[in-house]
Structures are given as structure tokens and as C-alpha cells.
Length: 424
Image (spheres, rainbow, N blue to C red):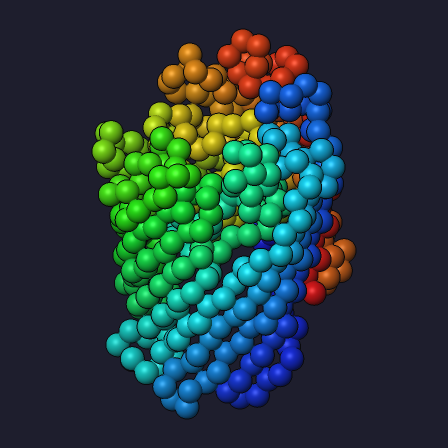
């Protein structure tokens, strides 16, 4: 749940000519995790390991002036060992192999000049779907194991490293390419019981220029499975979500800006969530440091839908301990975030992420006020190995004994992990 590697699944070329490409896809991720505190009501801490291998084929075929046919088929084998994670989502016994990607698509090439190169892009099947920066829809997480609901929500474990992301059934039509005016319409259905097997439709309309992108999103909930739906998820049927978003440099060199304001119209009332972010890279300074500030606010009954880790640590799982184990889980909170990233070498990135969480309402139920500091590195040892160690220091205001959920007092929890990411 906490990590979706930026490298993606890598491809080894099996065959290529002017019209045909066939690739073997493979990626492996393995992690060691340790948390000195737990958040599932059990005393002590947890030590566990997670891993997955994704493997399959992908390719494309030119259709002689009638566009390009594309597709992919991949499996994922995942497992968790040891105690299971610090929130009790896994118990260490998960072992599963399932189909992850199985989709076909068609791009128009230059067949429709008015819409530009590949101005029509249609795909369907089992695939990842992302809207904008993933604030509302990023992928079909989370990856729970046998811990919750007597194992009925088990998706194969590997909860933190997020082995599975694809929606079970999708149909996506994108029009207009990536520049100027462009948009999309889509339908998707989840087979993830932790997401109540939600079905929805959505549309986007964007304008992209040199200064950035402005966009509108609309989402309509079609159905949920009441057997698996939480009280919050049960309101997804007939839910309407609207958002205005933007991202880009605004014409300022080395700067980045992003925002989104979203409104949910639900049977039990309306909810809002929004964020504003600004960043700047000091390109001429040693190690080219990038400084980022973001404020995010989720109203008391906000449904985080299919948000996920979008552009690296901290989006939109904010805080490695908070977002994955302790909460808040993108609802009923305001979050200040400050990030600093430097590159001592081309193959090495160092980063510090600070988060301040403030519970907005319903403090009588669970107070998740906290602060967290995460320190991590990403070292590209070779083309086929990335090493990423991380230490998180999490300080809640309340413990499980007086209104929070950290067992064993509100002292600082030291969380540590080491990830090996192996694209082949």
C-alpha cells in the first residue's frame, strides 16, 4: 500500500521490427520491515517481510495505416512472512499468485488528424487506471491479507509494497492526445473486497500548455457489494464527485505547482477535500536540492475512493507510518507536509519528509493528531537493482489508552525498512 515503485515493470525485447514489438515483462520487489509499535490493539512491535514478482508479456502491432494494437498479460506472485504488518492487515502466512494485467488497446496513430497523433486511444480489460495526479483515482489498492474480517478480504498480502494495482474490468476512451484540449471517459469495476467491489463511471476534460495543465474530473458511483461495504463505502452507489485540478510550472523555471479541489455529493451530505502544493529546485546549488510544501485537507466524512501512491513517497499515502498503519487514512484530517530532496550523485537520491496531522472532528472517536519524519534513500546500484532504506519517526499525541491507537503509550515509534527493487 505504501510503495508503488517509480521504475514500473521493465521490459526485455523478445522481438521487434518496424510494425511489431513483443516484450517479456518482469519486476521483483522484496522488503524487510520493522515497527517498534503496533496499531491493531496488540502489544509490542512487529517484524515482517514482503515480496512479489510480476512477470508476463506485452507488445504492440501496427495495423498498416489503421492505427496500433497494444496489449499486455502479466501475473503477480506475492507473499508476506513473519509477524505480519503493524496494523494487522497481514499475518505472515499469505502466499498468492493471480492475474494482474490482461488488457487490449488501440491507438489511432495519424488516422484522425484533427485529434493529433494517437488522438484516439481505447483500451479495455484488467489494467491500472489513473486520473490526474491520482488524488481521486490512482489504482485499485489496498492489498490486504488474512488479518481483517477473518481473512475474507485477503488479496494476497504484500500490503506495504502493494503487489496488485489493476482494476478487474475497465473500458477507457481517451481523446485528443496529451496537448491542448483533451479528455477521457471510462468505466471500471473493482474485484477488491476491501474496496467493496465498487463500480463507477468517470470523465475528464483537460487543457495542457507550456505552463501546465488545468482539468475537470467527474465521477459517478454505479454500484457496491453491500456484503463488503463499510458504512462509508455503502454511500458510493449514486455518489457524484466533481473536482478542479491543475499542475505545472506556471512558466517559472525549476518551479512546480499543483492543486485539486474535490466535492462529493453523497446521500448523507456533501464532503470536500483539497490540496495545494508548491516546489522549487535550486538547480545551480550543490546536489540540486528540491524543496516542497503541501497542505491537504480531508473533511470528516470524506471517502478517499481509489487514491494511491502517485509520484513517490508521500503521495497520496502521506507518512509511511501514518498512511499505512496508524492513520489518518485520507479522511477527517488536515496535513502540513514539507519535503527536501537532494541528489549527491546521478544514481543516488536522499530525501526527508515531514508531516503534521491534525484531526478535524469526531475526536471523541479517535484522535490521530501526530507528527512524522521519514528519511530515505534511493540508490540505483545497477540497471537491475535499486536499494531503498527508510527510517520513520512517528510521534502521536494520543495512545490507545487515551483516545489514539498506538499501543504501549504515545512515545515515538521508530519504523524501519529496506527495499530491494529489481527490474529485469
